[in-house]
Length: 376
Image (cartoon, rainbow, N blue to C red; front, side, top):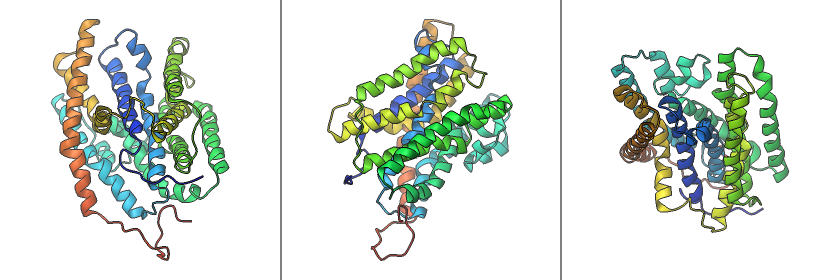
């Protein structure tokens, strides 16, 4: 396998575009459950929280693609990730707490502190892992992924392709074993362990890391992108009859399955989109507007639920039918506008400033004894 030179911010533009669609899946999921369903559409996105699983796999792919062979010191890598996620996290938590206050809803200061420290998903109490901004729970998992990534890269980067293959098979099998193995826990604890706990969610991140390493070193999947997209859609359609047959409260219900079993399907989609970009194919995911929407997706993810909560508080839930559809459209337009402003006014400038004032990185010489990520 040969390394591929060049890893710009949008070196793989279709992955940036896919970020928007994954965020949209999560937004529509919350609209369906917190505002009211829209016929047909809500059935398809009723388990759209699986979009978070997509982001966990994508994180592994993008980090492996970006840092494999880059020999970036661990302290620089961690500072870059802090600069990437924490400023907007802090602003979104402040906005969320302000909305809770207007609604006269109590907020746990311990939960807010745990959220800002990015450790809230480690606690099994719902008030802790939802924190001031419920959507921010996934950043606690991401922070854990960032901490373990340098060790993962050092362990896996120098291995042969068959090691990556067996690692991928192992984490998928581990998910299939853990899912029923945790079924005996009390419902709240089981839900936390399956849906929030960083340790269990790490399986999805590791799958992304090995996929990213394989792609970076020259592996190309044979699965065409349209087929991969069809698999993702088909997976969510399968959940519709599943939900009619099995209640979500059961451990083998479609709610946990939608997040726990979707990682291989999303990995296939990401790999197929990567191959299409590297082959120079037009995917419809890498145009200027798709790139722009992909850049806004993180801010949209963190802010959309706050907009939904505010709108429902001010106007109440709409009547079924066209009123619900109009409500959805209004929330989508407002939340996406808020996300654009948050990206351009907070997220992007804060990240650039923090990177500028933080630890710098100069590529070390071969004789430099300092430990760097990817070093064997």
